[in-house]
Length: 165
Image (cartoon, rainbow, N blue to C red; front, side):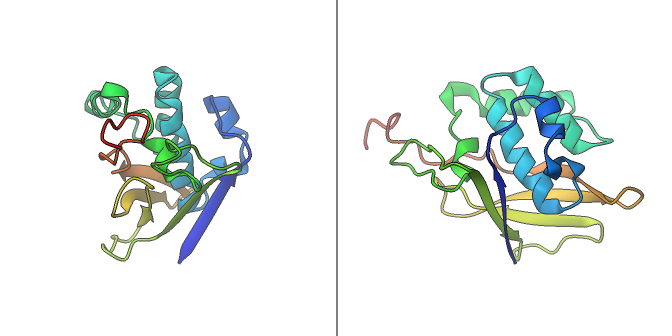
């Protein structure tokens, strides 16, 4: 099944994120789309992005190793990677998404999730294969929390940064 989640404006703070209907985390696709939104905040405001990701992770905040992984992934000007998950972004337009900001994803058919987990495939405009977001359900609240993500794997450089384009 394919899902889309759209935002008229991307949240820039945890408070803005919490004001969105998707922040109730009642559907796995909402948590996956909010993960993309939070990762887009990281290049401009690392501390706020970490607060947002901690919220999405619920009772399991980011570890120091997770934070180091984020720092490593965004080194060398790779700020465009999260933008590549929004509809309308392409290598040619330097991963500039359309507005509203829409994330399209599908249930992962590559892996079967254990009970209580859900795996979503998200397509990056700069990659040949989908990346995954694994979510974990908290039965007592019905919320879906971010468990792990592979969204920051390398992709093709946008034309503005590719000397061979």
